[in-house]
Image 1 (cartoon, helix red, strand yellow):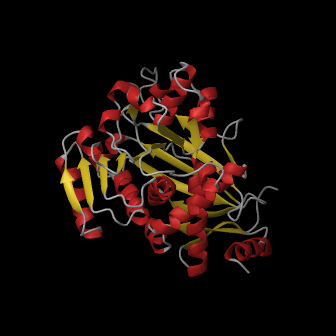
Image 2 (image 1 turned 90 degrees about the vertical axis):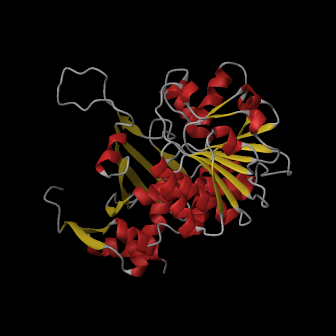
Image 3 (image 1 turned 135 degrees about the vertical axis):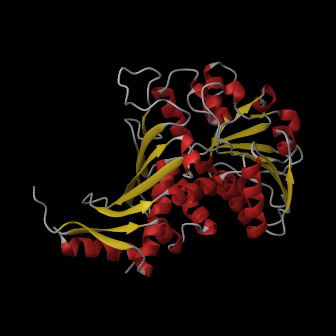
Length: 389
């Protein structure tokens, strides 16, 4: 009997009593949330399910990134939060089928000013639910869950789209996304020996270099001053810096003249491109086309003002008549083998990574099952019997 079958059997055997598992961040680590190879495998399976349609996300189109609460510039209510950078609350629900067959929701509040308090910019929790009864199965600390599933998407991309002899990685933004992306690249391209990093502050650069020295002591680290230096000569490049949305001219930008033949560009954070990167010889891959199509319904044009992912920029260009939808390729189709992965050592491939709730469900399900199998976490009681039926 699988862990999944056993947990469902236990749940049904005790109804109407409902217990669920609470997993702190320390519990999540013990259950393997930082296991990047397993995370990449889980996300690769998830992309195959996206491709065949065995999933649901938010919205009437079933493809929405999530539901967001933002605050107005001017409010008559003096206690309402001000719209400072990255100030928002967001719910990201999803169902994922296949071997997962789970529903879940990530909930988070975010404020860049958290860093002044010694807190992460975003504070996240995740709830996993039984798909038949709707009962909660687990409530998890989700900052690491989210960070590793975010890095695993570039890892899936690298598995199928990067040159296996890649040696040099260029990173813009020495934060959490850079760490998990690099961990994924190292897993898929083990010949990597050099990392170039551009950052804005000495403290972040020092922390990133200390992490590399501890985690990948054989790597050579080069601190660079510009985005151009990070991209030029790199086999893999990734923009991982958090910047304010609203003015795409201020987003980190990839210029065609910087990009070497055969490069794989992974963009999980704000990114813009120059006209050279629109050319037909640049393969433009989306983590999931359906999410970008949902933005067409949900946001006014130009949408790159509101969502800084490079894939959103592609769809603005489609509306301007400068690209066509046929120019877009889907990572799920590549994982499934319906679209080819890397075809030669010279092609340049850029992957837009927008983040999806199904990723949290996929990795959260794996960690929950690990925790159950290993007896990790604290069992909490929702009710012995519901007061209202």
